[in-house]
Image (spheres, rainbow, N blue to C red):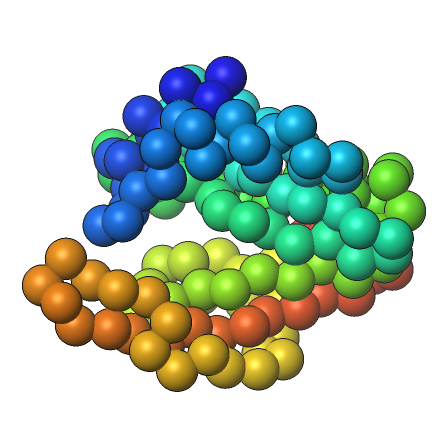
Length: 138
């Protein structure tokens, strides 16, 4: 599974994670992935909190509902593992991802300046988003 996650991640991000990074994450307690042919979500649950570590949808498959489905299913699984809040980080300039997360009820909880490195050497900040899981996702 780690190799497939790395392949998909490489199609979606400027600084993709390699198979070794995914393999190391997947053996940690509370970490799970939901994998589809065109994308995946990777979540870590610790105590009553969960974090979306990464969400990837291949560019040709975007805007067809897969990202929404993965967030919904991932949140449901995190809830089943005891999570009450779900967090994530998203690049400030990633409008599509920010729209998805806004649609699913995430709100800004903080900022990380210059968090993500771009291939051209520039850096962009991250928004820390959070969502109370006691309310159903749309």
